[in-house]
Amino acid sequence: MALVEIHDLHKSFGSNHVLRGIDFAVEEGEVVCVIGPSGSGKSTLLRCVNLLEVPEKGKVLVSGEDITDPDCHLDAARARIGMVFQQFNLFPHLSVLANCTVAQTTVLRRNASAAGEIARANLDRVGLNDKVNAYPMQLSGGQQQRVAIARALSMDPALMLFDEPTSALDPELVGDVLTVMRKLALDGMTMLVVTHEMAFAREVADRVVFMDGGVIVEQGPPAEVIGNPQQERTRTFLRRVL
Ligand code: ADP
Ligand code: MG
Image 1 (cartoon, rainbow, N blue to C red):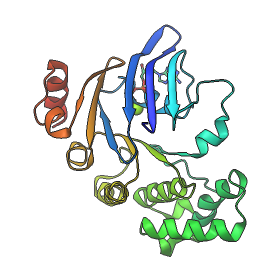
Image 2: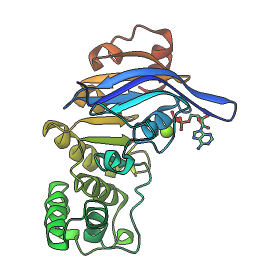
Image 3: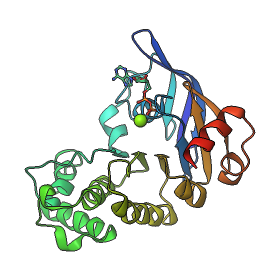
């Protein structure tokens, strides 16, 4: 059984038919990078995987459970999915440590000391054990994004979603975040990553999915999709970004 299965997914905003029948699956331990032009529906697809957007047609199964089913316990399903956004979305009034414990104590009902221990371990994992008492404002964008990753990891997710996690960063800060993500992939985390970092996709992805116009145009190992694309639309896109 795949960790995520998507069947014939459709999503519109008004008359804008954004996702036009998406079928794909992510296996446990797999790293899938989603690439494609701006406006092709990549973020909408990711947001449908944890039901931040509700699709009007199709199914999303997470660990075999249909999260589009109204009877599904959505909070429980969502707690298993970590999401990291382009804008880090940290709580500005909370310390780094508190950013990483608040959902653990409120959603998972962990006690404060257990949550603190888990948060510290994950902050250590992203190289920020010296920043536990800092506030987001005092950190660089790259550090804030690594806190956002530690916060998501502290929920013990089965799946991590990344939506252009390095797009808002100054170029010199991108590397540290990609290094953390690379390590996570090597640790066996299941990851679905929307990115424009082609070198990262080439090196880390097990599979690359190219989207355009709300459909998957082409997918396969990075050496094929990025190295030797079969579709003209993929070639046109890659010519522009490489
Ligand atoms: P990508 O991430 O590939 O750039 P998006 O999924 O963000 O693409 O957007 C795909 C299309 O859906 C765009 O035309 C965008 O304007 C539209 N869209 C995305 N989110 C919303 C929303 N919340 N309300 C209305 N339109 C939206
Ligand atoms: Mg997007």
